[in-house]
Length: 111
Image (cartoon, rainbow, N blue to C red; front, side):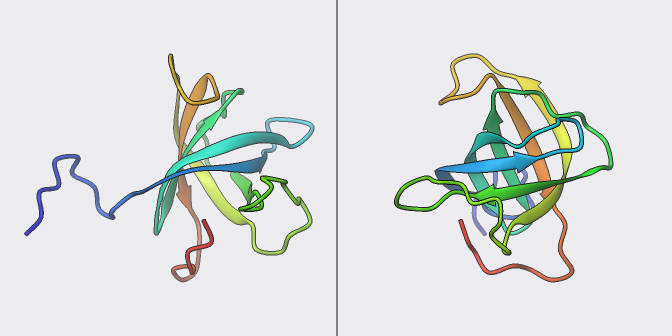
């Protein structure tokens, strides 16, 4: 049995992939970065706080080569913000947010 000192249900994979967020809390989409991901969740780093509520947000992964974000791509992820905290010394943003992905079945890894 592996040591799971963080007491996680699912293993995390590191990532620094750019993404775009569409949230009902903001009038327009904004960029963010995926710090890590699991089968059912994401850790995002962003410049804006996301409200913790049972409202769905959309996460659009950026192109792996260029980082360009296509808000028209059909395979975006949908989730709910479970926590959001202000961070110091992050990679790119002032806030980190834990997103629980909502799906009827596990997705293929697109990150």
